[in-house]
Structures are given as C-alpha cells and as structure tokens.
Length: 256
Length: 274
Ligand SMILES: Nc1ncnc2c1ncn2[C@@H]1O[C@H](COP(=O)(O)OP(=O)(O)OP(=O)(O)O)[C@@H](O)[C@H]1O
Ligand SMILES: [Mg+2]
Image (cartoon, rainbow over all chains, first blue to last red; front, top):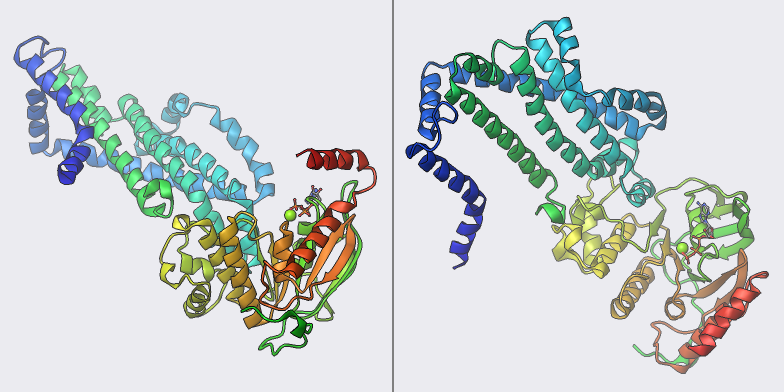
C-alpha cells in the first residue's frame, strides 16, 4: 500500500501535463484545431526527428547551451564575488553598492540596441546580455546572505578561536549559502529568458534563431518545437538548482 | 549521596589535575551612553572556584561576563587572569550561552571540534562521551532536543580544557527536569576538571545547588557576596538548602535601584495581589 502510495506520489506532478497532452492529441486528431495555427503533437515529433537527423537541432542546442553556460559562469561569478566583497567589507559596500543598485534599475534587455551596436550580432552580444542578466540575482542574494548570517554564530566562532579564513569557511559561507542558492535559481530563470530574447532579435544560430527563421517559412511546428525546448531547458536548469539545494543544504530541515 | 552536613568543611585546595584560572576584577566600569551598567566593580575569584552571579534582569550580568572574556574593552578598570592583565580572548576561556549556538551545517562531532587544530576528532569524541552523547556524533544539530544541544555546547566548551568557563544562563531555556540533569552534569565535570566556573543564572535554587559563592549584582556593583556552606552533592530537599534559597531570593527582591521606587512598589503590589 505504501509502495503504491509512493508511486502515485511520484507520478502526481506529471498528471496535469499528461492530461493537457491528451487533450491536444484528441483536439488535433478530430480536426478541431487547424494544423496551421497549432500543429498536432506528432507533427512536432516529426519536426524534431527531421531536424535531429540532419544534426541541425543538436548544433543549435549546443550553441544555446554554451552561450547560457558561459554567460552564467561569468555573470554569476562576478555577482557572487562582488556580493561577498560588499557583504564582508562595509567600505566596499559604501564605494560600490550605490552604483550597482543604480545600474540594476536599468532593465538589461533595454541594452540590446546598444549591445548590437557594440558587438554586432556575434557571440559576445549574447554572452554579454546573459552575463548582465544573471549578475544581479547572484549579487543581491550573496550580499544579503552574507549580511544576514547569524550574529550569534559569528560571535561564537570568534570566541572559539576561528581566524578570518576559518570564520568565512565555517560560518559565513555556509550561513549565506541558502540565500546564494536562491540567487542561483533566479539566475537560471533569467539566463534562459535573456538568451531567448537575444537569440530571437540578434542571432544566426541557437534555438531562438531556429524559431525566428522557422517563422519566415511558416513552419509553425518548428516554432512550437523551439518553445517546447526552451521550457524543457528551463525545467532542467530548475531541477539542477533543486538538486544543488538538496545536496548542499542537506543540514537544513526544510531541504531534507 | 546524602552526606552529613555537620561534617562539612569549606572546599580547600582539592587535587585539581589542572587548576583553574585565578580571576581578579579591579574597579571595572562600563556604560552605554548615559546608562551606567557597571560602576567600579571589584571581584576576586579563586582558581577552581564555582561562583554564581544573580541579579535582576538588565543589571549587567552578561556585560560583566563579556568584559571578563575580553569580548569588549571596559571603560575603566582591569581584569587580571592569573595575575596578568589580559584583554584579548584566548583559548583558556570558554563561553556557554542560553542558546546553544551550534553550527547547523556541521555534524555534532564537528561542532564539538570547532576551532580545534590538528587531530581534533579523538578529543571531540571523548568530550561527547563525557556529556553522554557519544552515539549522536553523526547527527545534525537540528534533530537534537534543547537539552541535548546544550550538552553538545558544553562538550564544545570543555574539549579544549579551558581554565575558565563562563556560563550565561545556559540552562534558562530548559525544562525543570532537564535543567537538574544538566546541573548535575556541569557539577560533576567541574569537580573532575577543576576549571574556574562563573555562572549567571536567574534561578536562585540553581545558584545554591552549584556555587561555592553567590554574588548579587546590584546597581553596577557587588551587593552581596555569600558563601554557600553546603556539602556536595547538595540535596535540594533539605532545610538548609531551602533556608539559603529563601534568604538569597529575599535579598534579590529586597532593594530596588533609587528612582525606581514607584515601579518597585507597583511590582511589590502585583506580587502581593497574585
Ligand atoms: N551593546 C550595548 N549597547 C547599549 N546598551 C547595552 C549594550 N549591552 C548591554 N546594554 C544595556 O546594559 C544593561 C545591562 O545589560 P546586560 O545584558 O548585561 O544585562 P543582564 O544582567 O545580563 O540582563 P538579563 O538578566 O536580562 O540577561 C541593559 O540595560 C542593556 O540594555
Ligand atoms: Mg544577560
């Protein structure tokens, strides 16, 4: 009984997607929706196989993932380090935080025209935009995490003879980690969002470009395929973030 | 073990393996803004002595401990450890708080070993065994009960064999039964290891049960310095125990700070009416 229960528990999140897919299937089969507007599920499957066979799909996927990953590493890395610096040093905060907050209030996608002027539609443009997009969530959450580390634990650490580095390793970093991981999750979301927009507007490769060029040839199935791929990639990134939380915060009762 | 009270002699030079720290506090004053918390306080605590500090809330007990530990500098006066003026924190002094302050992201054993260098696992294990938690070393602190957390904190405080243990209401958040268990544990470890102990407590019966001396902090100075002439281990039920407890409690409640007489009268009325 408990086994059956556990099985149902696992399956529960898939129930709604399955129902929707079924409804779509039947709606397409019975001809309620026009394939021009909304292609049937199997047509999208066909498109995936067609593009997959030619290697085109995998190439676009690879390019998009590489851009996202590179932008995430650069922007996330800078945001993390700057968040640490400003969180740990009141002097650095006074010097830098105001400027960072000012830049933060500019929606980074508003910079697309400027970025295209600077970099054209080369790789730099996309990576730059993703970098900018993921920088702020990591900066703010790292900063906040470091600042809100339990004062009592810090005092305890000092009293028990921890030096600066040990205090960071034993108390500050683990104490800030839950907040940092919230930042990672937000950054993952912004990473894909930024990349989609950037690839749609200024690109000659990647999933966003695939969708954009398919539109010109009225290939609705490919457009939908690209959208499905984005949601799949987003879901993957989210699962990765959850996995990181479960692994790194296994001490936390809320993540066990 | 009920021992006969007439046999009691004040504790004299017990055979300590490692004597505690001799603490001299000379004319210490501390204020925060206009608030004078401690005023030229003098206090002498012998090596290996167990001293309890009682007093009304806000009278400066925690402040005194912080000054002794060197967590903040005093406005005036001097704290001498074994005759030497010392202002810095060092490994000879350990602090225990009302909240256990365990690192939630470290297993119990690593919490006990925090700040230790080199081969810390063995001593940490021994310290855990001393507080009766050797089988919980691989647990996260969050699964422990309040009393168990405090026992881990005690193990952490004692693993480095301090000469002075400062306890700031360490048992204040525990239930009555656990509290008595912890008191017995602290007493037995103190008897065994011979460190100097300074215990801040709101619980007068705890002070009578554990301390060689009870200090009442009042208006920033020592208002009462009372030896507890009861043999160990002390039985709570005895008439002598109850008499001492009553006397100290009466003394704590008796005098009120000047200018506060109205509030004091109101307080007295509430007590009378309840
Ligand atoms: N850092 C500080 N800044 C300003 N005021 C302080 C500070 N530390 C303590 N005080 C004040 O000094 C007084 C004594 O505080 P302390 O914590 O020593 O009292 P206490 O005797 O430990 O009280 P309790 O029994 O409630 O713990 C209080 O009025 C408190 O508000
Ligand atoms: Mg206090």
